[in-house]
Length: 135
Image 1 (tube, rainbow, N blue to C red):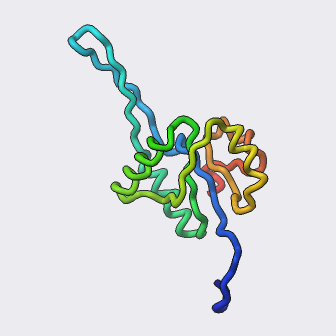
Image 2 (cartoon, helix red, strand yellow; image 1 turned 90 degrees about the vertical axis):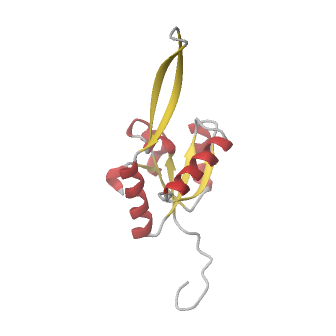
Image 3 (cartoon, helix red, strand yellow; image 1 turned 90 degrees about the horizontal axis):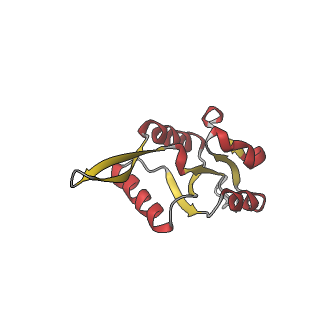
């Protein structure tokens, strides 16, 4: 809104991949002291989430959460956990089957200014690839 005029401009958006702020640990416990059972434990990197929240508030960009390894239900549960902890900077979340599906969709999304991902996968996104040094 500029001087009382309603604007049709799309808000700028940064896509954030789940792997940038989740640490996955595999814990192995022995059941009945013989059978090893592994359990995947996901922990949030709170400093990264805080940095994303401050970035979105300071610059005014909308953040979208994207995952390639979670299902829709798992990602919704993860967003609900973030809401309960009070550190949810994301307004939207989407599940993609593979990185290539996201890469193919990027040219058709003019509101996206970048994709925040791990440094090992940044080249796949072309000029949309972002890391934390660019925030």
